[in-house]
Image (cartoon, rainbow, N blue to C red; front, side, top):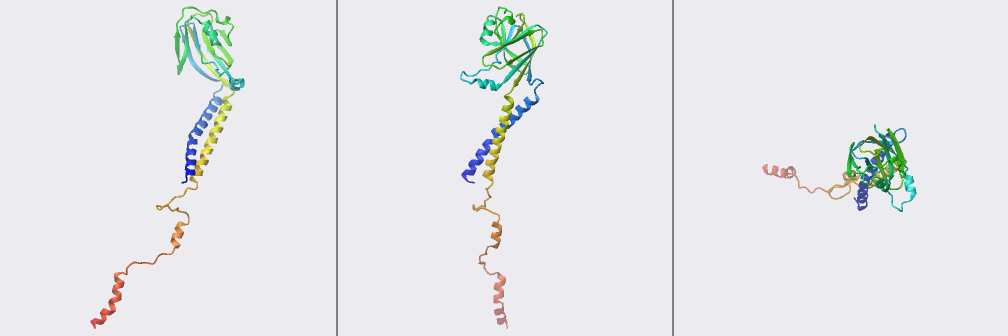
Length: 266
C-alpha cells in the first residue's frame, strides 16, 4: 500500500469518531426537543421540592453572560424563553432580578443559594443573616415576577446580563417550601440539531470515501512480493516447462544392458 493510501486510510478512520458523535448528538437533541415538548413548546424538568428555613432561596443559573463585544444578534438568535412553575400551599413570591439589586435587597438576610442537584435533591449554600426583608413585590427592579398562593407561572426571555432567581414568602417571613418545575423553549435548538446531523453525515461520508479509496486497489501479494492477479494462474499453466534433468530410472538402465547379458549366456 502506497503512502498516499495509508494517509487516506488514517484520515478516514480519524473522521469516523467525530462523525458518529455529531450524528448521535444531533439525533438525541432532535428527539428530546421534538418529543419532549409540552403543548406550549416548552421542554420541562422538575427540580423537586425547594425547602429552606431561611426567608429567601436564590439561584444564579438564570443569566445569559456574553462578552462586551458580542453582537446583539447572537442573543436574538438564541431565542430562548424560560418558564417557572411554582406550586405551594403558602402565599409565595418568585422573581428574576439583576444580581446586584437582589444582593442589596437581601443584605443582612439569611438565605440559601442553590448550587447543585442530585436527581431531585437540591444542594444549598447557606448564608447567615438576622434581618427580615421587606415586601418583595414592592421592589421595582424585577425583570419578571409573580406572587400569590399558587400555583404560579413566571415567564421571561433570556436577556443579556447577570440575573438571579429568588423564591420567598410574600411577606418575607422565614420558611420557604414549594415544588418547582423549569421549562425552556429555545428556537435555536432545531437549527442546532439539524446542523449537527448534517455535519455528522458529511464527516461519515468523507470517512467512508477515504477508506474505500485506500483499500479499493490494494491486491494481495505472494511471498516474493509479486502481485497475484486474475491471470497469474492461467499464465503459470501455459508457460513452457524446462527440460527434465532427472537421472534415468533403474528400470531403464536394466533394459539397456539386458540384450548383452543374453549373448554371454548362450
